[in-house]
Image 1 (cartoon, rainbow, N blue to C red):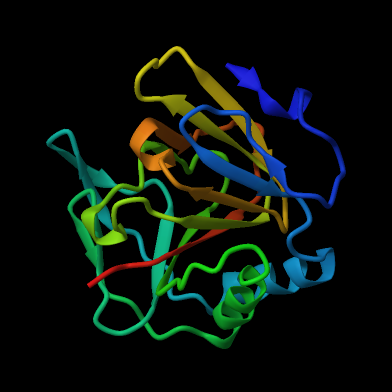
Image 2 (cartoon, helix red, strand yellow):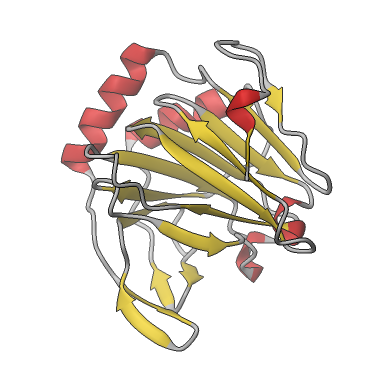
Amino acid sequence: MLDLDTILPENTSEEIILPLENSKISYHRYFLSEKKADFYFQKLMKDTSWQQDDITVFGKTYAQPRLTALYGEAGKPYTYSGITLNPSPFEDLHLEILEQLQSVTETGFTSVLLNLYRDGNDSNGWHADDEKELGKNPVIASVSLGAKRYFQLKSKENPKQTYKISLHHGSLLLMEGLTQHYWLHQLPKSKKITTPRINLTFRKIEG
């Protein structure tokens, strides 16, 4: 697995395009200021209506290894792995981040799925965000808060082609174009991580 941290520019405020074929993935290390990221993290930890659902993968049902919450426009549920989430209305904090996203993408996001990884035992296995309600070429804007975690990518056509990149506190990873058609991604477990991470994934749910 190639560690992209070793070949990408360090400590740059510029957009970084990941060098993966059949994809459009950009990384913005300093999307949020440290002050804003700290404030958002503390407020989301305290005020989010976190829940832990059972998911079904390959016919097996088990407790999802993270907590989640869905916020967004009314009448736009989101279904994955046998779970259907109905959104609570956007909070002011979500709308603040949405406004900042307009400087990076013109996508009209309707929803945000939040994930809370309580420590390194929580994870999210290999998958693509390719549910039909996300449209033909989904745009996923992923904002990270809290503990730095590795985000891994694997080619669907060549599973030996794998990459990883560190997602920092206050950063943004934007996946667009054909990415979900050709690539899987995951957030693996890590025994070294003892503190929580919140991930806000903004999506446009159609229909």
